[in-house]
Image 1 (tube, one colour):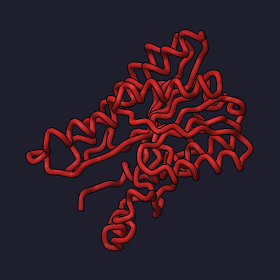
Image 2 (image 1 turned 180 degrees about the vertical axis):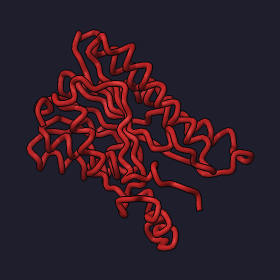
Image 3 (image 1 turned 60 degrees about the vertical axis):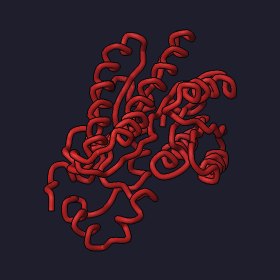
Length: 256
């Protein structure tokens, strides 16, 4: 896509699933990519190989988005390795299931730290670098349909994603004069390793598919294509919006 080739992107949680799909797609479009991971390095290495096989370049960085030292290290890595950065994709996320009345304080803190605090301070560090360099940038947050849609048993996740939506709205206004766009992508049910239990439970899977008008789960490629668009020149006048990728789930969902 126009305007991505030669740019530098930072993608959090890029060792598997949606993050891996995004990092690989940006690499295929010609971007150099900082591949963030926190768990198993094998996935990050797989992502880096895919980027290099596409003819671009990547750099693996192990960084926990909930730790300020790691946040600074991750953003700094782009400038140290490639001299700058143009794109930040806040993809790393997690969820914990529990009834609201039984939710432990530790689960609340962890879910909010990964899904909201991490993007807040990563974006802050990224924007500070852009301001110092007097250059524009693109920020894409991987949110969820649950930034707007209730999800019983996952109140912490809904709070975090709802907060991410409001953060995006605010930053679109605050950062617009700097030439920085900020948008959210809200995936629905996506086939990734984190959903392996669902994929292997045919009754639950079929019940979910019955709620999706397009009749299938999404894939990381479905999400990655929208990220590439929002980072391209074609999206230069788009900011402050959430783009839902859910096969129509939000329009048809009901609890079983």
